[in-house]
Image 1: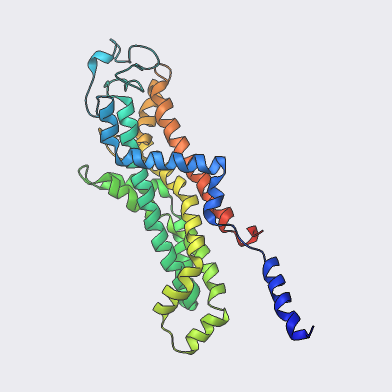
Image 2: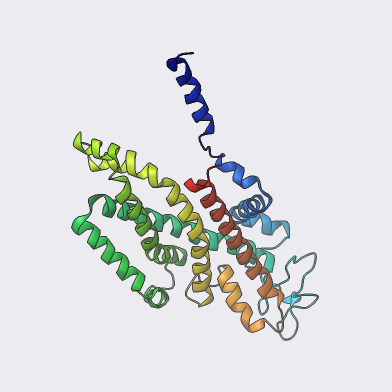
Length: 311
């Protein structure tokens, strides 16, 4: 057998031995990630069809049920008034159906969390790629803006801004803008670091020599290479955005009553903790389960897209 006859066999053998990556979706077939994915899907569907879900119990989040309250305005009955009519009990002081408050609160919390994550991701990706690709004074300006944003007291600014805006202003939009505008520095630094490496690759240098414009490099060479990092970082940071909305609503600077929100329900439940622990349990459990599930999905996606995870 000649050398030329052996080369294809050796090449085929080396190809077979090359590490291969399992499809990303296989990582979500394991029990824990699969359960987390189911929880996330259920929470999103609950937020979308909140009105229909609350109607199944024959209630809505804005009707007061005085007959479900005792003389001290605390819920009557077992565990905060849990019954066939009120699956999670009722809200102390008002008698509003707690199940309806929880499913409608998912709409506000998830909407603000997802929308602010998208806003922060868009700002961070654009600034990160521009800083990493252009360099020089532009990179220094982006780094300075990043340091200023990270050093700014987020909670103080959010509280002050909510006091300046009129009460009739859309609070969900205000929360989205505030959380999103303070959430871009982290992803901007990650994307800028990756962009610095990408723009030094031979194919990018060759494109520049051939006269490719920055827009072409941005869309066709840099952005596709940082896409996996952006997706993973966004999934990991999303629970923090949801918690930020809950924190602001807990502090009283989020959505205003009677609009349901997990954070506001948790804040209202603190004063009723010894009288009605169910009022705190259900909104807090919903917030914990959803943010925990998003964290698991983010970690699973990160491991699946990690280049060191090939087998």
